[in-house]
Image (cartoon, rainbow, N blue to C red; front, side, top):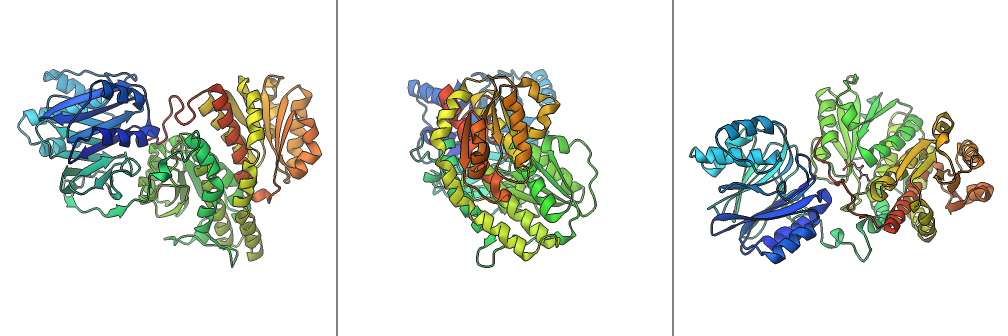
Length: 607
Ligand code: F6R
């Protein structure tokens, strides 16, 4: 949610800032801007809308300078226009910010009373003017920042440059992520290592509350309390290839097609194929003592938790509570002593999920997480982390992160079942065998891409689309609806197939495509009856089933896709793929911006 970058370089930095912003655009694309120092004075270029508008502004009016900061915005305070675009600046200070300064109104009132004139509706401008006010009182840039940081409520990652100081840049983080990149005679700040992947692979992740003073030769890091501290330097493995489109039309399509590979990579981290067992990383507590589990996440990651609830309750026989992070945190849920809570997040930075994690921790829960970014805040604040090996996910709509989350959660459910004595080795071995087959079956599912593209023409004409499923495929119905909504802007809902008759069936007519997700499992006949109810009312069904299911009922539906037959345990992982492809092709037909849908951002670091 907003991407920031900063460079103290050896030569002109603007092109590198723009390159970095290209990698950060998934964090927001309401406006973009850069600021540099030219002969000690702050100069800015900013543009409303996508980065390409800033690039045009820079072509029209180039910007030199060996120190600079850049920003790509996801608007919170103030509409997306040029005046609200970052960097915000006074004659002395320029700032880019990711997060929300919650007490900006009070700060703004105080500073306005002192004669400061604000030029935007953003919360960020309070940061710029407060630092400037302290410098006006005679404080050095470093002391002015230290004094200002103590006064901010809320979340922030900041990169700050100062007029007249070509060899100084200050970064700070609380809540929002920030990384320092170490170069050779040049230094960098970025919202994540992806932003810095062309500049350096040596990265230092700041801890919450840290702030960092950079010059060309190095960095000094301070804790929130102002104590100097060392943070480890890690080698980032984000290559340029991993963050490119690799010949695909969109990141989303590339990421859908990567699924067989990344599902396999993720499984390798958890499965012992010879023994046909699951191995989890070491945990600081005994899994067998867990009597109740809470699963928390947002959006697509929340749907992964919903699938996991079915798996864990069935295999481990313990009650599982699930909630979206933004609700869990504020509903004052009672938590049992010694209970465990598991947080699922692709980015590992989602503000709602992080706040819920801290809340559960404060109530004595063991904290587990499933994340795709090993160095993320959620990973660092967990007692144990299970990694998905999806690689960088750039398309705003989550695809490969979701299926790899499911894989990890499936492994966790098996391990918990074994630890609780609820499944024996033979059952574990069967489930492991089913999981081992998933990469190959996922490749077969991708063979249906052409047919799904044809069906997308029908979906693209609809105003509303319904998705139905039961059991572990009910969350897949909701995930399919979310994918369609977010990238095509077509209204869609996912329902438990059995709930249709309690209301939503009133929506059915020939203009509402109904996607029925029904592998041949123990609930197949029940879902089949619900499909008949839809057809009887003139609904046009797109039936996603397996070869035996299609043979049985395919003739009833307007269109049928027959996926490979698999153990029902792993079916939701595979059925996620056709709903992704259907949404993708519908979006292409409608001509929407697949990788950067309107109003969205990939890493949601505001609450
Ligand atoms: C939907 C999507 C979002 C994210 C949600 C949580 O395609 O990507 O719903 O799943 O914002 O993000 P993470 O998993 O990074 O916590």
